Length: 318
Image (cartoon, rainbow, N blue to C red; front, side, top):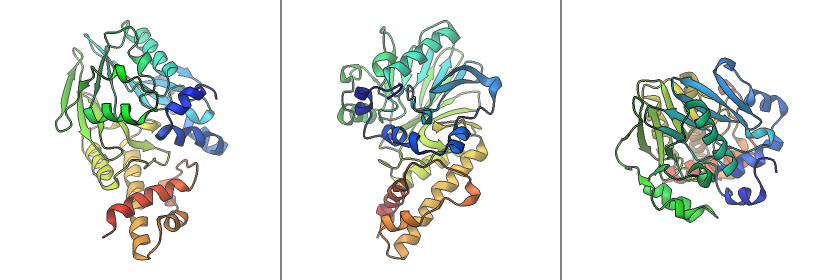
């Protein structure tokens, strides 16, 4: 299992990681190629089999993971933001190897180690590399208390000792992280999980969305509350940002975020139709097709349609 050994794979089970890990082998080559295509080669500062690092602005880089090739070293997206006084790593990624590589890139690009790590939510494809992300000490971990608790409770083998001194992100207000000449606002949301955050780099168009946003891959609703997810994504759309780093998929434009919102709406509509017809989630999921106008969305198994429609039905049912 390239880029993710069996121990790591078991540790990331139960979240988006398995969704991605199983998906790779089943994705048609044409869609896999579209997923990994580099549309802005001038932005790429580092390239590996598992993904690429793209510069989005002065001191801002996005890690775009491409795990469908079978190498899942980083697995999720994330990034780096550098100021005069500190360097932020967004996410701890899907393995220690992935987080270590990102830490090395921080040093290579800025001349300094990462000083802060922010977790957007608890799923272990975003947190399994915590040991490497905090290696060497002095790295401040930021997460909501709910995310911290869920990492400890649900992610088998998680380094609980590294969560004890996490700096709690306010679940009800914006938190400001000042890196020195570069400020990042951490905004609480929910919907993909019980506790999500986004990160906006001030004075730039860049917004790190975590798994509230997926681009080109059908999202995993394993913990989702769909109405809250829809509300949170619309808040991201209204933020004024124009460059969105999703949890999975290529860096998204405003038009691509609108396409994602339309996808969410189409799933809700399918759930409402299913309820009106007295269908089960399984029957409605079997019938569902992504509207042609929304283009291709990578899907491992139609069961993910059922999961998403079922989550909406649970909310909508009288």
